[in-house]
Amino acid sequence: AQSVAQPEDQVNVAEGNPLTVKCTYSVSGNPYLFWYVQYPNRGLQFLLKYITGDNLVKGSYGFEAEFNKSQTSFHLKKPSALVSDSALYFCAVRAANFGNEKLTFGTGTRLTIIP
Amino acid sequence: EADIYQTPRYLVIGTGKKITLECSQTMGHDKMYWYQQDPGMELHLIHYSYGVNSTEKGDLSSESTVSRIRTEHFPLTLESARPSHTSQYLCASSEYWDRGGNTEAFFGQGTRLTVV
Image (cartoon, rainbow over all chains, first blue to last red; front, side, top):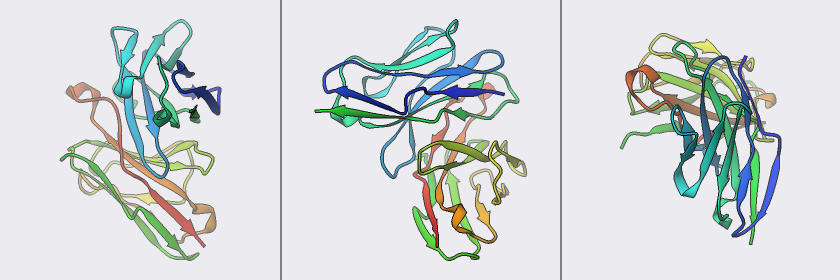
């Protein structure tokens, strides 16, 4: 069975500082990895994905994430946090093989940027 | 504009009522999903579909049912609503990876259901 772990329920970062939101995964075979953001009373918005190729992927709003196969991690990063980055962040995984269509999410990390 | 729509956004309903949550997408995606989101934020997959006439149960057991008669439409029905069904319900869709489409799922805005 595939799974995602987001070890931190809450992350607080001062505005202007770098931020990291952690994610580790477990899946059979190669993974497709995703980050989503959710603002209050809204659906999930896609931020970025890793499918293949370069381990560092860049996404929307200045976010990036680094795929580390040996550590089975896909941490979300941003060099300089903005107050508007405060939201709920979800990491997700699915196996990169046809026939497995299930997308599994982590439990979410609430990111708060302190002015 | 291609998108995914959920209606209603908010619903307050009495115990025992039958309800249907609507989800429609205009992207031509084959795969569609329903997720239930706890107040504490965790997402649970309750139903998914590979295409027309295909429906599967997800990881979390749910008393709801779904149907997929048309590609663009994936409604969720509760025959008899109970307070334990109070939650946010998120619908999503995605393309098959081998058709060269994007692999990420696109989400609707959600329906917040309250059963009193």
